Length: 222
Image 1 (cartoon, rainbow, N blue to C red):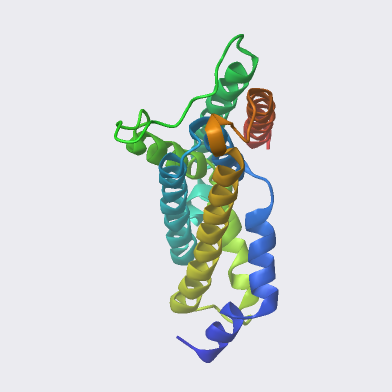
Image 2 (spheres, rainbow, N blue to C red):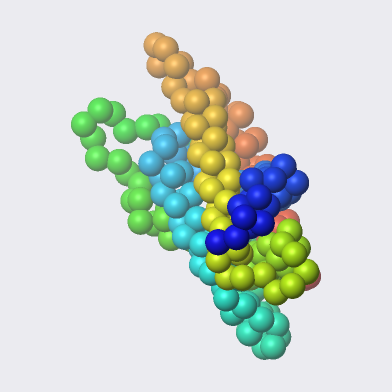
């Protein structure tokens, strides 16, 4: 590990660039907000976030090792990958939109103390994983994004790994902040009053559904 890599990893330019990319609206953020609105509890949302980070780590490894270049050599593989990812986003968005428009659809309530949670965490973990893993452009982006902050000569795997680790750490922090803020907004307050009324929940589901459907279409056509 060179001092150059350490300096780059801590540089304002790299940190600001990572933050701008990660915090921009995308499938991961929309899925987190969708799950926050639906589950109103941290565990399911954090499970999905963990799945996203696992997929992101896989893409980071592929970017560092140059494995994503194989995808560029196989356009049909890239297309199938994109179609699969678009289907995941489309199904998630369609379900959110259906729940927003369905007559009499009540917002789910958190389980009472001592009751087992209705949602299975592995399912949310898988959903988060598929949301990120279904977009091969993430891996291609990291393949191009990380080396540009290092010297012109071929960057070492160790230097790229450090930058990838910082990128993932910022991503994890963003998902944690988004989850915590979202849960606090929709959490039940005093005397059985909800801070997040049913109409707002419907609107949130509708917006998340439309955005996810739009992202699915974008992933498919580009």
